[in-house]
Length: 171
Picture 1 (cartoon, rainbow, N blue to C red):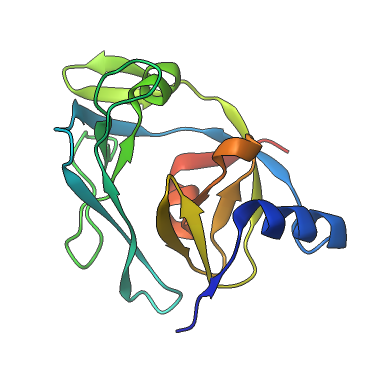
Picture 2 (tube, rainbow, N blue to C red):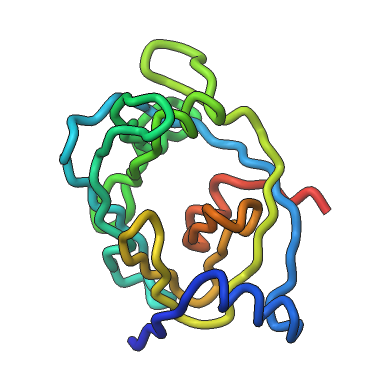
């Protein structure tokens, strides 16, 4: 499977101008287990391609947040019974979030369980397999995945699977 490496800002700008990318709004709606990581700790985020084969979406590291000076959080998505979600290959659905973003986006509902605050964000659906840069790391996004374009300085990809289990369209 081939992935095309792109500059995210240029790719989105060109797609919006040509009409190949169409923006839409969605509200975040998910629960997670969250805990602070240790500086330098590596977290592998898995996804699947269109044939349901496992692929590494990205490899991220826990860092100190530039705004707060605190380490990033590691998040693991959970189901309605607060059980960590695993894909059919056994991989946990986990990722890293900066402290300032976490505090702004999640609220505690019980012990280590948090839910999103339901912010509305702007997305575009990706019509091809891409590699984008996110937080100075490369990230693969398969055709049918999405790019959050709410903040031009912090655009990021989300797989189709994760989008469909985390967001609700509001249009």
